[in-house]
Image (spheres, each protein chain N blue to C red):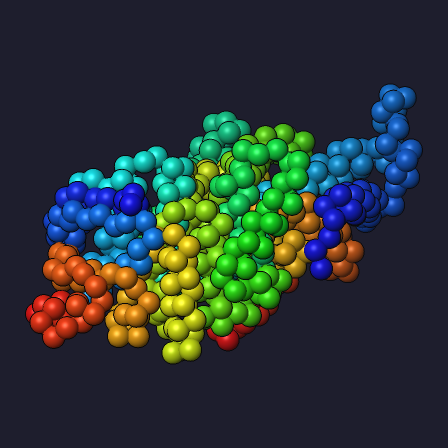
Length: 236
Length: 328
């Protein structure tokens, strides 16, 4: 199986502090990887370094590309889900399509293509009924699903999600987790930083445990939530 | 209620033509507009022609330039800072530009050449824009943008008042007050020609940022992940704002709130898209300034109230309304 993510000695240093220790990692396509660990352990920082959102040392097969190719390889769903302008769901997805995927295409049938891609992404995230709603009227769970749909229109092989379950109620959490699982079953590699390890475990194929910027455990969710590994990841 | 762009643009164009006609026609003296317009063709110099060509025409053109530039800068700043409260005068760029103008007068540079005052204004507007963007890039909350703007505004205001209080020359004091109030009463073609190219250049930079503003709706991180070049976007907004606000303020003084109010009027018509807001705000803002200036001439006041005073009187309640709406 091809690797969709590969890093070697990837590390992040900010103002002299090493936020991510040299990390060598490979993730196969179609895996659903949850990154778990305490607040400030470096979960988000590791993901941002892999896709080149922040300066880092070492190698990552995504961040080593130019910015356009990065955007073809990986899509990002941020933790801050605040959209200031009250645009419609359709419009929000259109921004990415118009400025990234179809930016070099002529106007012939462009709006058809855009509408088609939007419909596709909304269908895949079970949010078709939201297409004409304004962002401001969505619930936290709906907004998260829409932002995942936003990532899907990039048609990348990998999607990174920063704390996708943060500030969602239990029902919303389950629906976002099911969505993540469905995506990984279609062959998309999903990487997500997580706090809700127990609720999430059955939806992921692999967990990475991070402590103080270092990957201290790597394996099946079941194994990492066993007493020994759990202590290693979450206790100082 | 999004509208067809072609219909929208013809509608706005018609309104601008009507507005310009009204602006040329309405005033303290009634003139025969048509006769005045064609009189230069016959080499005549009638009083009507002088009123039209030397007084009203530059004023009308200046109103259009002021509205266009300030509207563009306001929509650009709101889009880039992702803050519906941002605007050149609210975030202190206008008062910094006015400080630049006042300083060039206070230090005697304005007497040396015509371009010293605009140059000072542009420079100070650029410093204020830079400081705003630099300081807000690290700030966490939406309200901090406005707080930082208040800081920049207060500092510029304090220096302006300092120069005012140290100035012994009554003529200079008069000039300084003029810049703090904002007025199109005494503009000439010279002012129009000085500001128009700079406003156009600034608009070019701001319009270059239009697509980036759409992506920035998703947040800086996500925009970067799709390939948006945030540093370039920041530079375009900074240079564009400094050029438009600096050149306009150096000629007419502080005219506030035009750039705040207009994007809010435009947004419902363009589905709240930042790029379209940026494109449609300038002509609407030009129209609003034109109407405000006509209103000033129609108001039965002993002496004309200043344009900047009127826009502030109308704009500040709107600003407060927006702030109160944000809290909820």
